[in-house]
Length: 355
Image (cartoon, rainbow, N blue to C red):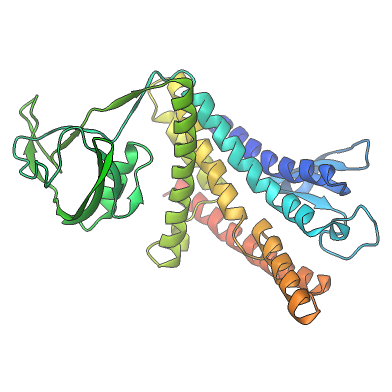
């Protein structure tokens, strides 16, 4: 069951991305030749009133919105190439914008029934914690940042403590409405005693019990902060990949994403909770798609915008811009490379399923 839900969710996110391009193109008066969900052989086809072909293709690994004059020069006044700079930027960025908005909408809908949100307010300490006081941490302090990274939501606390060196942290806390900076604050994972149960545990000795009532305004705020948090997680993932801390084998394609979504559902206690967890994970995937597609890599939306900026700069400085044919060749080469990467990732995902 959850595999079907996962496939549907992934398909919706792809459709939302391409629908963003489609709506933007229509608003800007650009002719859309084909709106496709999936890649490869066509399974279903229908021609719209304005001549656009709507197709469903066999391979659920993407989609596209083919526009007149997108890859080659065209004399058609309704071609993409004949539009102004900002209209073209809007059309290319619209897919990522739509993915981001879908992610925001999912988070907000999930928060509708929430009555309170946990905060990063420190409400107590383990008995052995010796760094209390005005020069250290105090009950009532709210963690504002750890090692320069803003704490948007409660779960950020554990994330950034785990990413630190495990010995010293640069902390900023809110105390009585003012920011207090604690540089090189010595905190290490130690054995502490739980004040209530008396049991020992490994941790930092901090207790977080702060909550904030979920008014409509707070729900909007938390929706935005969760969205920013998801974007930041994507940035971290890309940084780890660039730095070599993660390899190509750690990447996941459609098969891996569907498999992970399915696992999220199976590990949840009950169908309703499973659907909520899957939706929350889907919001993160939507943010991932938004950021990834805006990267300045040829064949991606961000790559098209990057070429436009280079052409504009070349035209202003040297009176020349990148020929459409050259851009088309470069995009074609990178598209083939991306498809090769997608094939590798897909094979790796399938291999993981049977290990």
